[in-house]
Amino acid sequence: MQWTAEQDLILAELHAKRLGNTFITKWMRISLADVRARLVELGLAKPPASRSTKGVSIAAPVEVSDLESIGDDEDDDLIVIDGCPRGYLVPEQRIASIYKSIGRGY
Image (cartoon, rainbow, N blue to C red):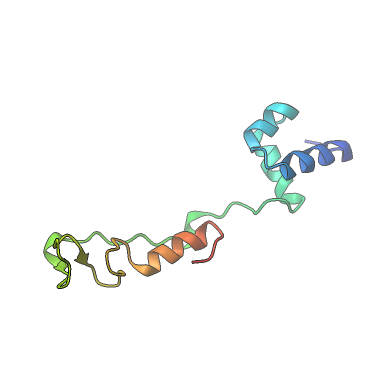
């Protein structure tokens, strides 16, 4: 598709207003793939990362027998999982990787 300066300006303006790509495609009557590609070319969006290069780690399933009760818990409802903060069901590294994957700090 041939993009004009006017279309680039409109695209950048709509993107700056934080409107979704689906809305932009309907408003400008351009395919979603073209809008995404142009946003990347203009430096307004990050290129999509493939799953293999992203390095997403998934927490390993935990067996109930591996869990230990916390001694000072009155209700005896908190458990301890290796690598997890007290009362958490997901390891600290996994929590940090989730925040990092969405571009935020933990």
